[in-house]
Each structure stands twice: as C-alpha cells, then as structure tokens.
Length: 345
Ligand code: SF4
Ligand code: SF4
Image (cartoon, rainbow, N blue to C red; front, top):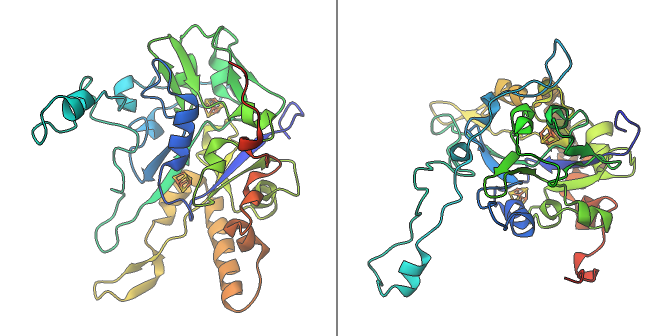
C-alpha cells in the first residue's frame, strides 16, 4: 500500500534473464514517443552496467529527497546532449540518391550529440579475463514519494489511486524542476512542445487489463508487473515474501516501485585460469552501491535455492523466476491487447 492508502502498480526486472535486447525500449518507443519532439525520448531504456547510462552520468546528477528536510531537492537538469541520440539519418541520399556504394548511412545534425541511449553498450568494467557487465532496464519508478511531483510548481503531476505518477501536459509549463528533482533522471523535455514527458506506466493498457508493453513484449520473460499488495502475485512474492527483488538507489528516498532481482556473478579466474571460488567477478560493493546492503542476502537466497534444486529439491522461487507460463508475468493484466477494439479516431 502507498502512503495514502491506495494501491501501487509495481514492476520487477530479473537482471539474470535480461539479455539487453532493447525489445522493451522499442515496444515503448513505438507506442508512446513517435510524435513531434520525442525523437530523443526513451521512456524505457536499457543500459550496460557499470556504465555512464542515459542520460550520461545520471547517477551523479542529484535530486531525490533531502535527508535533512524530507523535501525534494534539486539536482542537475539533464541536457538534450546528455540524453543524446535523436539523430536524423541520410536515408534519402543512401536509398534514393543514386549514390549506390558511395554514400553510407550516417547521422546528420545534430551530429554534435556524441552520446545516445546505451551508447556504452557492453563496455562494462574489469580486465580480461575478469571483465563483467549486466543490463539494467529503467523506466519511471512511479515512486511512492515522487520528488518530481513535489518539485512541480504548477501541479501538473499527480499520483493516481493505482500508484502511477502521471503528468497533465496541458498544465505543464515546461519549467523542468521535475527533471532536476527526479534522482533517476527519467524525465525528458520535449523542445518542440515545451513540456516535460515521462513513462506513463502504459496506463491506458493497465485500465483495460493489458500489461505494459515493456512487460508483455520482453522475449526473455524477465519482467513482472502486478499490484504490490496482491499476495498472490509474483511481484508480491519476489519483493515482499522472498525479498530477492530490490529497489535501485533506494537511498534517494523516493520509494521506487520498480524492483530488480540482482545479477548473480561468475567467479573470477586466477592468473592460471583456475576458478577463484571466493571472489565474484562483479564486485559486491558495486552491487551494494546500486541495490543497497540487502543485495548480499538476496544473492545468498538465490544461490541457496539454486543449490537446493541441484540437489534434487524443488524451488517455488526459481519456478516463479523462470515463468514457465508467461502469463504469470502479467499479474492481473492478462487481457490480450489484440482482443481490444481500437478506439475510433
Ligand atoms: S525486452 Fe526484456 S530481455 Fe530485452 S532488454 Fe528489455 S527487459 Fe531485457
Ligand atoms: S522515477 Fe523520477 S519521474 Fe518517476 S516518479 Fe520517481 S521521481 Fe518522479
């Protein structure tokens, strides 16, 4: 339950199953951000971690709750260049310009954008043979204590009874205080229409009983959705019962409602290439900086369930994570979108 006694839609991304394919990002993009001024907007974005992410170096941009006052604090307002991407390409020249073999696809203005969503894909960290990375999908966290909402001087943002944080674009004045106060930097600015925009949690789908596009389209069966107080849901079990799904950067104080099953790590190889069973390749302190100190217990719980199964036992937790029946990912939002009648235009 949220502070005001209403329900909360929540997501769980299993980082051990995410393959970084960006299907969730593209599913979201084609549904919601194809209009004027939205070319650079990726409400769902998947980054390689460790990495600088989207926008570039977002984790150092501040925002969130001021621990001393309990109020929203400002931070850096990400620029269009820091989000990057959104280029036009020379399609006409390449495909219709009679330049076969000479012209190649390349970004046109604004070429100065030397960054884009997942620009540092698969770079990660560490030295061969102990290099490492994992993928981190991010959407708006539809926070319980949304500092974006607190920082908005016009009242354009609201938190609905189902916990989704939405914006009334007719009320938004484009002040961008929300961008500064969001510690996850998941708000974009539409420079054409002069309004801020962010993930709407696929609320028209939720209202029709259809799971959000990032959940429904994921080929890795890596994303769960449901109500956080629904004890029968996978989301409830992963977050509340088993405590193996954790919020990202909870220290920001906004009460995020997107949770992550942290990545298990292969062990390091010694100089003679034998396995060092004492040392995971992803430094535990790095994972703690992302998911808090609970990450160690969560990973230990996962490992112990895996050991149980290896010894012939059964694990409801692992069966839930595997999602043999993909509909189990969807919580109560199991309606087939193809069964809906398109709205009259
Ligand atoms: S669609 Fe699924 S597997 Fe692909 S990047 Fe998104 S969460 Fe990961
Ligand atoms: S993630 Fe940012 S934009 Fe989304 S509700 Fe939280 S503070 Fe607001």
